[in-house]
Length: 113
Image (tube, rainbow, N blue to C red; front, side, top):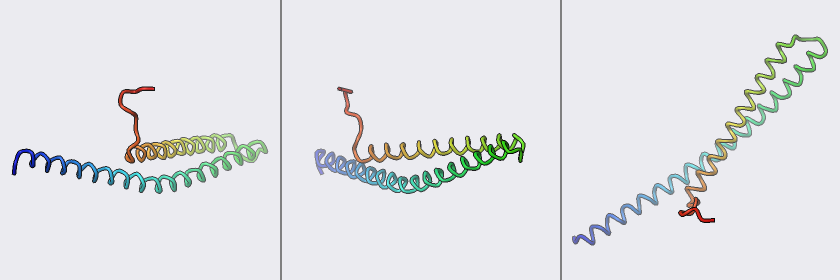
């Protein structure tokens, strides 16, 4: 085995390792995509439900049925749900970027316009 052949074997092995890593990254991003879409849908539903609860609490307060503490509690829960929705949306967007990069997308070196 010559030095040139050894270098070629090393280069082939490194290339194969890179290809396997790329396939794994794409597979991971695709698997995450489905999970995150389901999570986003569930959080959308939870946020809408909490929005409805907050609206009901405000109506009940205006009608004198409950104290303002119930309104505050409902508003706090709505805020928490909206924050969770933003976090879920961020995870979806991060996953899209990871998939794009795994598929070979990215910035061109040199930063030209």
